[in-house]
Image (cartoon, rainbow, N blue to C red; front, top):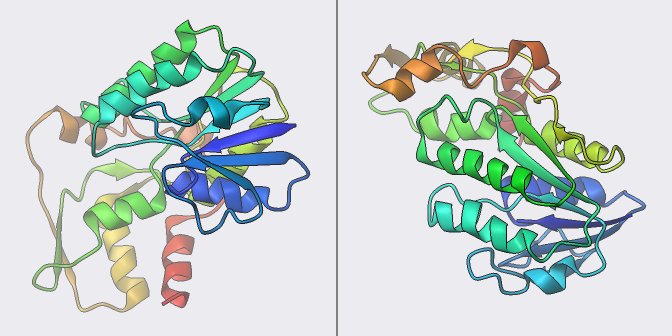
Amino acid sequence: MRILVTGSTGQLGSAVVNLLKDSDCSVKITSRRRPKCGENFDWIYSDMLTGQGLEEAAKDIDVVIHAATSPMKKTKEIEVLGLSKFLSKLTHIKHFIYPSIVGIEDIPFKYYKYKYEAEEVLKQSFIPYTVVRATQFHSFVDSLFLSKPVFKGYFIPGNIKFQTVDVGDFANHLIKLTDKGPQGKTDEFAGPKIMTLREMADLKIRINNQPNRVYSFSFPGRLYKALLKGKNTNPIQNVGTVTFEDYLRKKMTER
């Protein structure tokens, strides 16, 4: 099997590439920058925004794991328009694996809106595909809400819910999908435990032995209400194995 991993320098792409080191598959990786962890594989420069290098990268490939993404800059151009152009070059592909996010149709966040549009672009194409949604990564919630205490405290919308998942767990799941063939939209991949953000903050304070407090507040709007209702979670699909506590303890030992 010949696999192409796009976005090989990103968090998910790097995790996929790292796990594929021990694979018997022929692996090619592509991104705008050469990844540090991909020295064992053929790397090809490509740009999802311009389309440069994508045709060469996809040559002689059976399966694509599409980890390329851009949540902050030129999101629509890359997530939707770039994907559409990329798919037009993949008429020979046997399986296109698209990682997505749980709850994107119910959460009013621009990045999620474009991820949902990208799913629709893929569904309307003639490419055999699998769409698999995951909950947010541990590191995403940690860095967004809990990275730097202010005045010895975390000021957070503490009641919103997350079911964070380990990026390595999800990367391993994507690799296993390469052997199963196209499934359309498949079962979601959620973390092992649903927690409020306040519970996550309290856990980080305890594990890191921090002299911090948690100041919880609410705010108006559809985004807050969606997260409060747990639209970004899926308790039925709690298949991840690494908990947020595991993540924090590992991060603590790596300092």
